[in-house]
Length: 97
Length: 344
Image (cartoon, rainbow over all chains, first blue to last red; front, side):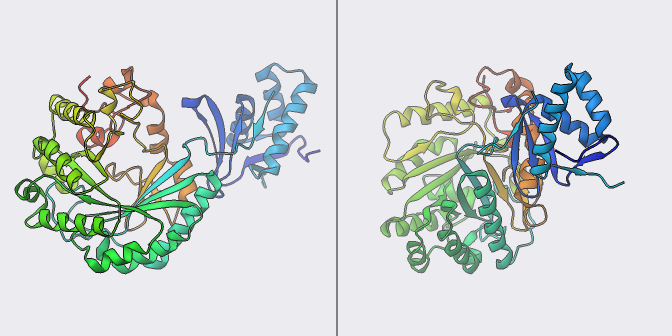
């Protein structure tokens, strides 16, 4: 399990750029320093965009559930999947306040 | 529902990635139409040039692309020793498939030809020519340049080196094109590329020599007709606006490579989307290719055809053409404006 509990703030790692590529109707995550790039769907893009704007985990969870009209179990599973991928691939990190 | 994955290839480019690398802006010619300004940029030392090759390889490796490269100037043979050192380094590259040298040809003696023959990565040498006679060429490129260029072509051809010719088409030489095709074909030149005059740099004073859409159409139609007669040189037709002539012909026309699969590196390490679109989008040593390629808002704006203005934005051939962004920029200040030479 990820160690991302209520009240913890997440942030994008330095050099991470998230943006839609409208010509091909896809969403991408770019690492401007290491050159890695990842494809994501709109929901994952939305999650990472939200993290980029500054949000704590409980707020993210709540907004994610509302935005995509998910039940708690689905929202938690999906969110965990995105966050795990993002942590493992050095896309996000815990913000030190 | 929320999904992420690591794709295997760069989403923004095809199988190849092209670097046009200007290692100097110094030149022994003073061509009227040159896109360079009067003041030559600072130059990087050899160590920095070799670091740039490392950066290219890192990017190509990460993107899974086959690299191609043009080494040019200014006149690249003015930095002969650095040029040869770079060629040796690139010859050994696993990631750069081949390179061309773009030169005015004036400094290519028998000695240079012997050195060039030793480089397996060199695909071809491109020289510039603006007319089929000394009079027409030298009026643009300066006295003696026609003979100098023709001598270089012959020396290179005798040594078995593949030669291409590039001509910049304007009102100064529009009627020379058929004769140039004939001339370079007879000289054993393999390829002829035709670029449009972009009135920038020294060439800014030639804006009145830029072809009107009707004049450009006439030149392109003439070229296309000659190509259909199987001339002795292959005329490269994969340039924006050629698609207007024969939209169903797969070898005619192409999208501009700016923002898609190419970058231009200047002598001081500044990076442009294209040499003819001189908008700095980063510095290769300070920023690196990843930050420039993925982070430049200029490149993102170019990539999205929804940003195209005027007739380019409404064109039914938007998948095949999109015009020349440099010509739009040079004439309107907006690189997403319509191509002012389009005749549709």
